[in-house]
Image (cartoon, rainbow, N blue to C red):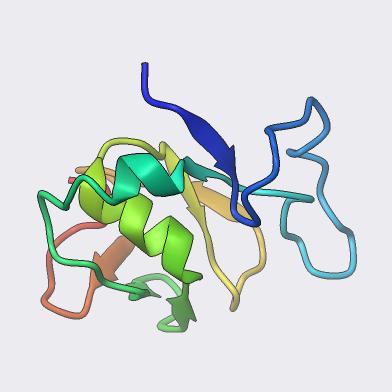
Length: 105
C-alpha cells in the first residue's frame, strides 16, 4: 500500500470527507505522499479537466494532479466546480482531460 497524506502533507484524518456546504468540497483530499509521487509518473501531469455535462473546466491542485499521474486509478470520483458535487470517474465518467481522454482511465 502506498503512503498517503492530505494535500497539505498532513496525516489523513477520519473527518477529511466532510463537505463544506459553502464550496461543496471535502475538508481535505487524500493524495499519494510526496515521496511516492517523486518516484515518477505513468501518465502526464494534467491539472485541468472538463465536465461533459456542464462544460465547466476544473483545475486541481498540484498534489492531486501528480497523484492522478502516478496512479491513474487512485481516485474513484472527482469534483466539478461548475455543478459543485463529486462524481464518479473512469470509463463511464463524465470528465475528460484536455487531450480528450477520460479522467481516471
